[in-house]
Amino acid sequence: FRAMAEGSTGVRRLGATVLDLAYVACGRLDSFCGVGLKPWDLAAGSLMVLEAGGLVADFDGEQGWMDSGNVLAASPK
Image (tube, rainbow, N blue to C red; front, side, top):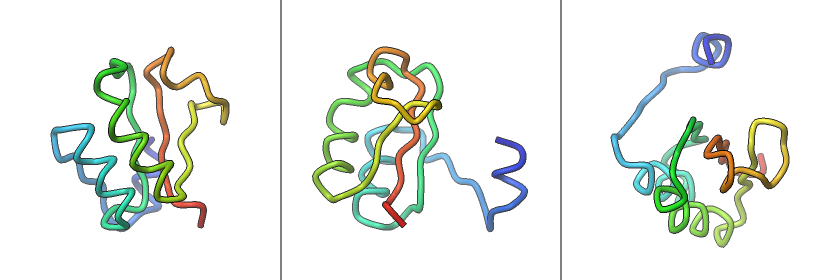
């Protein structure tokens, strides 16, 4: 996270996972990183990202993010 934060223009946390993911889905944010989140925090927001053509994965690039609660979401770019 430190390397990512230092290499970016800024890091922002809005306080609601679904809002962060909705902003990724509509292009207001480039990406989202969450650790230890609950399924109810991820369900709606991750669906918005996926339906918008974005990518959602766990830290290994796999689809275990709903079980682990560790998630990365971003546009395909």
